[in-house]
Image (cartoon, rainbow, N blue to C red; front, side):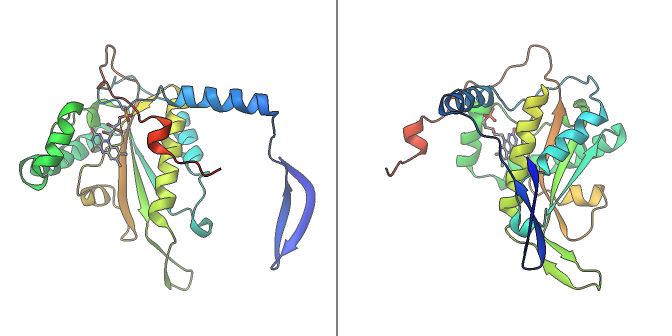
Amino acid sequence: MYNKEKIVVNGFEHIGYEPETYTEEEMISRSASFYNWLDKRRSVREFSDKPVPKEIIENLILSASTAPSGAHKQPWTFCAISNAKLKSKIRVAAEVEEKLGYESRMSDRWKKDLTHLGTDMHKPFIETAPWIIVAFKRVYEFDQDGTKHNNYYVNESVGIACGMFISAIHNAGLVTLTHTPSPMNFLAQLLGRPSNERAYILFPVGYAKKQTFVPKLDRKKIEEVSLFFE
Ligand SMILES: Cc1cc2nc3c(=O)[nH]c(=O)nc-3n(C[C@H](O)[C@H](O)[C@H](O)COP(=O)(O)O)c2cc1C
């Protein structure tokens, strides 16, 4: 990966990097098998309470944290919760927001768009899943002298990190749900996060409940999601 070559750019050390390469045949085979493996991922809403070792969660977070980010600010914090009391508090608060959402905040169109997924205001998986991981975006930072400065492309960076997190979960043989109980301010309060952090996505992580069902969905075909200009 890295070799011994070194150069200095703008006064900063750059190190030689040799990405892994493959033959075209290998690339076709690897890209196809990666796609087929990713295509098996599904959002799961029914979890087993079977424990998952903390080391796995740490590896998942480290995987997410390899994501590219604007100016390499890595503007994310992942809070991992297995504490049953805290999970209960999060469930209660999430269900308050979800109830308001379903009863008054969401448009009829939005609710109609959700009917095929079978979701409702009840979120038992927040207590059942062994881990709840809340990804926070760090909108700004404080320098050592206390000066506040914004991070760059925060949504893009955290979105990419969360996508890599989801893939890492799938790779580990676990499941998750991308859950956004909106608004999510209650999460920063319950977890005592500072004012520069905003909850971004809540991920229950664990094993799927035995005999789990997921909505039968189709994914768009290549010609529906892409245009080639050759
Ligand atoms: C940003 C985002 C927010 C989502 N929020 C919720 C949510 O709050 N509750 C839920 O049940 N699913 C939520 N989902 C999951 C989607 O419904 C799900 O990804 C979609 O139906 C496709 O299913 P699949 O993930 O199994 O491919 C969300 C997905 C994304 C990307």
